[in-house]
Image (cartoon, rainbow, N blue to C red):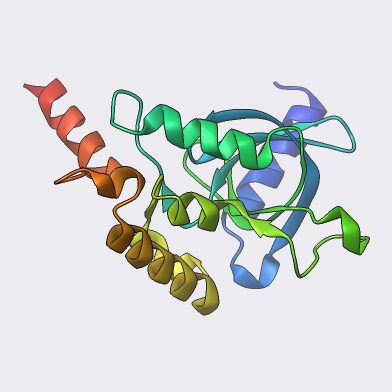
Length: 182
């Protein structure tokens, strides 16, 4: 039998994992690690670390073109900065999936109108795709903004869109899995 803290944490994950949009939560903290172009680690006020997958985007995988640039760009945006994560689900790996907003310190208590949406910035730079398969999990405004910024990045030919036929990360992962099965 696990510790009481462990059991409570597991129960919380199960409850939150099945919560719908009405149960949206906010996590306030500082980004202490950038894992890749769409995943960060946030340290909250209680000094607990939370792995967070940016909602609505999918960044290039390791061994894929622009993977390192995507990670570095996200790091420049969020590393060591205060963020607000708006979320309402966890993925199958237990990560929080949420909208990561870099706090605008000039307005007082976050969230603020000038907070920067890190996922949207990744798309705008051409360093992540809008993850259409999960579009229904976004607000209508976020869906529209992600789609609009991806179209603009494609038209400008920046980042992944500078390649002739960029491979979306979900296709890259699928090809990798099917290659491993052979």
